[in-house]
Length: 63
Image 1 (spheres, one colour):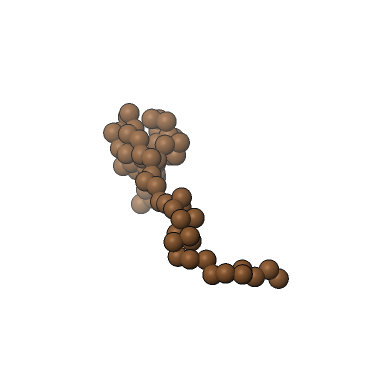
Image 2 (tube, rainbow, N blue to C red; image 1 turned 90 degrees about the horizontal axis):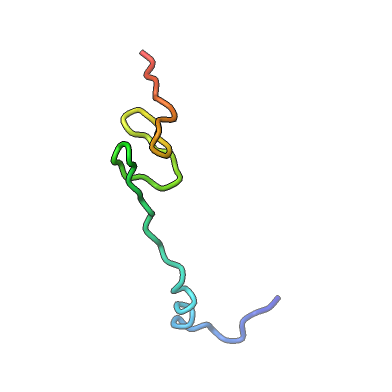
């Protein structure tokens, strides 16, 4: 098995890891409801499932 000949310094290790960072979610505003949601995803608002500004499904409450 291959083993490193020298210890990788913390600086060198951290330089390599600078490109891994968390990014904020891209949120868009629905033209119909005005709610923020992730683009290209369906979302629930007041018991209705919306996608591309249209109602796709309604939540039925069983009583």
